[in-house]
Image (cartoon, rainbow, N blue to C red; front, side, top):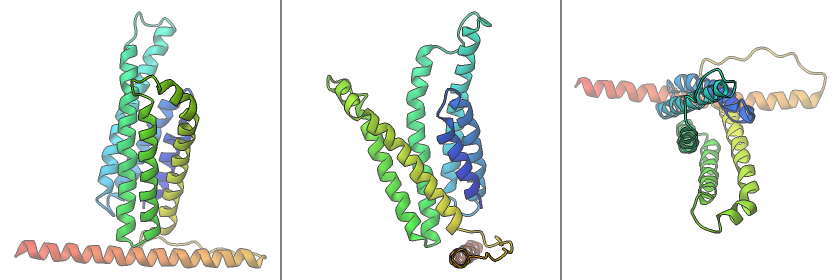
Length: 240
């Protein structure tokens, strides 16, 4: 369906970009997310919001990457002056934070929408929970920008906690996306035959996993059939 690509893209854009070349890695990650959201939008229109979010993040990181290349060329004395100013980098840092919030919010909203329509209530609940953590993180983060005297003390006391909370949110989102991959399936998905294990507990685990997959596939089939029926009914009404 696209959840596998979404998991890979989001993981690359977040966890795998925590280093000096992170902007270039994030650029690739959000490109993959865009491809995933395009696939998923065929099943639920809400993922068009994620498409827009992925495009915005790609543009932001393209500009940040271009600025980084410009700084490298200037430091190596290959150009006489910087292509982008330091103030541009500061502005892009703030823009990245704002657009990142919109991107994650769009992703969680899209997941919640398809989870509700396929009646996977646990995923819908978890997406709302992750959004709550996201809002808390941004409120705590924005406090550090307030022009008050206590700001420095606040950063010293809560800066580490806010950083950890960011990684917790990323981890929760990755678990959420993987849950979608495991429980929300395309009706054309098929399973390859698997050789039985010598261990009874492994076979029992596989049987339970198979049961859950079959249930998810059946729920997805019912959802797609209902959606197609509504579309046909809508087309009939429009013709009248």
